[in-house]
Image 1 (tube, rainbow, N blue to C red):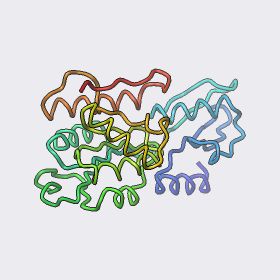
Image 2 (cartoon, helix red, strand yellow):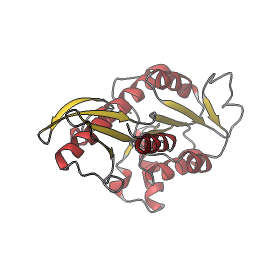
Image 3 (cartoon, helix red, strand yellow):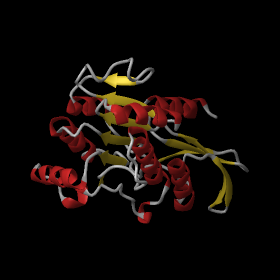
Length: 240
């Protein structure tokens, strides 16, 4: 790798921007491909660029045949993140599950009695109000956001920030009645139905979960399904 390319790669990784390094296995030539058209200035052609972006979305490096060439696509993705609003019992189960799945977890709760190191050992905690925390954390395409407090003063500002972001998953705890009221508030705040449809509510896959641990499993399973499945496969909701 050329020094210039190495510096660019180091800079992109420091900025936590997804980038794929595409190497032609015959000529040794290398180019970067980003996960959006605006950032990519590539002469590789549409087929190779698409293959590189698919590799970024799948988080998988490897050898591919594209554009009549044999290429090695090396994926450099920042860690997936999960932002949990509400340091409640479900969060105590969800946070370690997500960490085991490779997510960088941040638990957000201004109620200091809830967000403590003893309840969430080894995890990042934020005692900021959710809107302030979300502004600082800047959810992106590799970020999932889950609200768990049942308190509109905490959940709604977080959901508004998430809906304005590129977060790949947004989930909110609550019954269908609670979720309906939540959607009405957010609609009154100016969000269109098509935007509100991004929220998975009630949160989690429908596995008849009851305990905090079971609900946490259903949430992590749904996050995984959204991350791994093509958008056209749709989504599954958790039963009320």
